[in-house]
Length: 393
Image 1 (tube, rainbow, N blue to C red):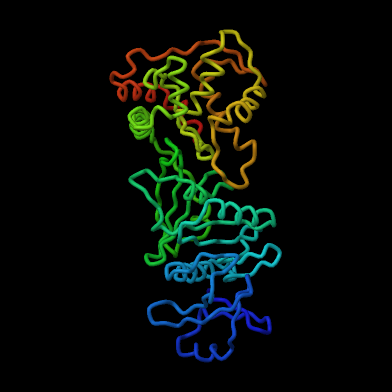
Image 2 (image 1 turned 180 degrees about the vertical axis):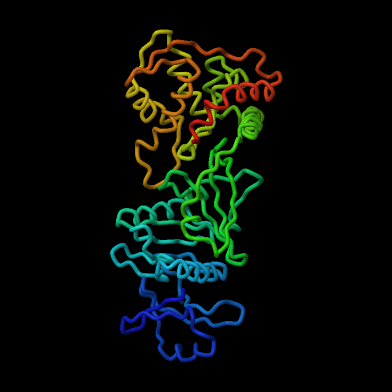
């Protein structure tokens, strides 16, 4: 911490205090945490940035502060000052008993930034984010770049990392920061092809770049379909090879109905916007929609769109899981399903009449589905490229 409270209640900061003047501040002791009111000590060693630390663990914000965290807050504060947004460092918010790393006004919003340098529970992030939102603060989490696990065009999207998806805008983004390199890295175009892995585009920015460019990065149109075909195919084949495949609910569901994963048609497992909301892999949740509302229906069957929505949130809750993200509305949750229905409609399976769908064509199971799969799937995606990519415009 750079800010402490004196016995009188006055707040002091040592952010820009030289080491020579720290002895003057020591005479102001004792120091207290503005958040939990426990006593602090002033640390001024040569190896670490001078800071205040709890004598014992903070009861409200228990994770300790590393040198990376201290340096990151210092750099972010300097960056925001250059942006002219008048940031406050470690401002205490008594209405919610929170102390975000930074607070400032931007686009008529009270913005708080939390720079997260260690792995904590997704429940803790969810709780703190929800608390900010419920009290009209606009929370943005910056993730330490060293915690990001990635490969070219892919990011690991586990329950921890997924909490950092900044989704209160048209294009979801994960923002990371590297204090030592003084770089921001944004991950956009996030489209998961499995529970824990997603396609993404990576962009690096410097601390000289404007705030709008980093906090509001634009989505880029890129043809990632060949990459998607290869990785989604790899994922599907792996499911049948895992030692515990017999316990997989999805595979059990298929085998009980005499369906094999490699016999599923290519229109199952399509990349669509906002799928990051759903933890269940796209092949799985799209299969259930395809199966219950197309494969098991007769031509001419009339289906209410409300029926589909009720079925998703009540009947399919044993098979489809959503990520625990705060501030996701019901309309946002249903959007990926609506997009998938729209895609099936564009292929001629449904006729869309206002609030109803009519089945006009039955799907076909793949014959010799294990032969030339990647090649045949690539032909399907090439043929339907525009029908898929239109969702991302």
